[in-house]
Image 1 (cartoon, rainbow over the protein chains, first blue to last red):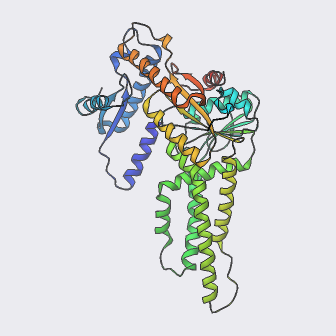
Image 2 (image 1 turned 30 degrees about the vertical axis):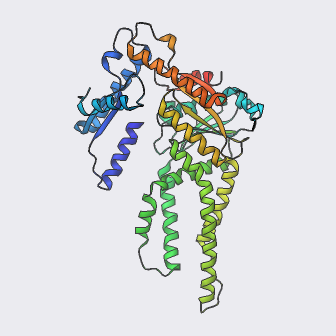
Image 3 (image 1 turned 60 degrees about the vertical axis):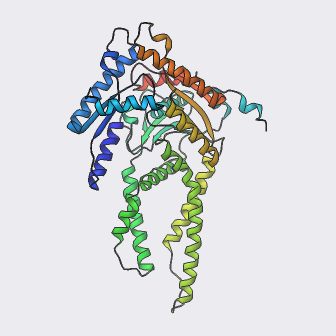
Length: 95
Length: 332
């Protein structure tokens, strides 16, 4: 659904010549955690679901995807978490 | 000031529904991604199972009911397979927008002629309809049409993300002020024209004025329904996380200001701590711990308003059987 909304916004931007610099994928569950031996089922299932949509995102936006940012172990509140997020965004490679 | 004991009493979702026998319009609001659509679906399924004739309606510009129900419900109320008494309906906003554009065109053309202004209506129409508020007001109009038609016993709306929903509902108050002002200016302009006119013939029919008056009546009726706590309830969905909590906190304040009745708070996607093995990754344990902290905050902030706490499902909630399972938990 978020993917559909994004595609819709992109079309609207294009119509009015507003440049789009890229896309950022948020809350990607890290593979090593999702596939570790004792990962709870919900996490593994959500990981599988995400991988399906990630493929779609890469297909739709290709090299316009500037970063894929991981899901952290808690929500992003406070400077420490924001700094970790920034690092993932600027220095991370696509997952 | 002391709060009456009844509002202190903690009602479950079922308890709340039982306490409002005339309840008719049910809304779900909250930050994007908290599960509003799924909860609207579960609530609609649960209410239909309790014997009410229910319409589950989506006014979102991007619909997800068909995807959730595994069934095409776009464009008209469609009986939901596997649930008696339940219909689902994704409203075609494009249609409404085209229709409103046409109406606006006619009004602008009429007005340009009326005011002796040279110019093409197209430019004005483009400006008027590209406005993001235009799509929102089209959605709002669609919602009102459904409410006024009054063909079901209960309506569950899968509303747009928070800010939009608030504007939609707040709009009725703002509209009323605006329309009154417009009607007044129109009256003055009309009087002026009559006085200045050489031919003393009666001013012809005024379509703008008719529209404004009709619009005002619609808004008044909408406000009456939407602010009646026996008929309407707005539920706020949150996760045990900082941002969704902040959003519904703000939202609850706005709604109290507008006098729109709040049904309560629903906490979604709580990880079942028992399903997490002790050997599970640090990552998972930290999330469980974080949720526990935020559950305390939710308790402190919303306490007696919390109607239900729902678990994070192992897979995406899709299809009628899963919605029934969730409905069972929502109304437990």
